Length: 389
Image 1: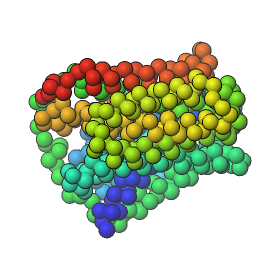
Image 2 (image 1 turned 180 degrees about the vertical axis):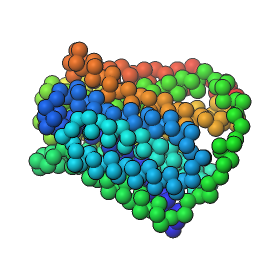
Image 3 (image 1 turned 135 degrees about the horizontal axis):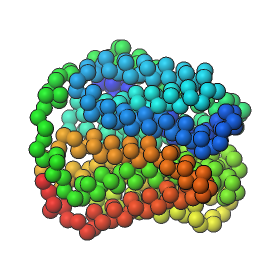
């Protein structure tokens, strides 16, 4: 029972982060109208959450292994709860809103890395990979459910920040589980571990895959941020339907990750990597650039999510294949690269939108996903697995 409760807490950690990140594109316009600022300014303010998660990813490299897991959980999610309460009560203050989101992102960013650490200690190697994929499914499920909830609340006339109520509920549940659970034994072994001499000599494909994760999260976040606005103003979708595209994408992502758990056994990680990279780019282009029948955009958004096929974990798994002994910092460094892409997306894309318009913001996301496809093909087809360390 203790392991089940801690596993649930890990899933909720992924849920809380994704649930805060996913509806940014949906909430930007109503929040900007309430605070009487431009949409670009609002995206930058909401994007402070991504900046916080980036700082959390960096901080996790130094905190994990040095602070007992139970104490760290109570501190992180207790502070997170305070930040969400501030979002619910002080949402008319732009500076307070930005600051609360940044601190929330910092806490949840550390919590995400901590959840992966807890999973790795709770399960043996043969079950560990499947449970980590399951955390990704929780991440996608949160994106779908919270985005859909945001659309429903806005349509019903509720304040835009009421979306954060479900995030508060998930955080409170994590705190409750932490209070009543026994965490894996915390030791100083990680803190005292010597530096892996192989960590500085990564093969070229590993560096390419690490960079790929930056472009993947940058392209995904940028596309989802500006897709609802472009779909409404230039593709002719109704407001509710345009906002629903984000939720449809995350629903498809959830389905794709469940399929990956089964398919990767028979197809192999390399083929799944190429399929996810190409599928994500091609179907996103179909959604944006091809004139499709009315009402088909929602189905294409679901297909877009499905065609990602758990790309992030496929990339990491492919990178580990280049090592006989995997460096301790490999996974955390690759996740940090992904966090950089998420964090920089609101800032770079909002500046481009101010200069050239919303369509060009979406175009930047498309170009980034195209780079992902090219790098994936290059790594899998052109560079052999013989480059091992």
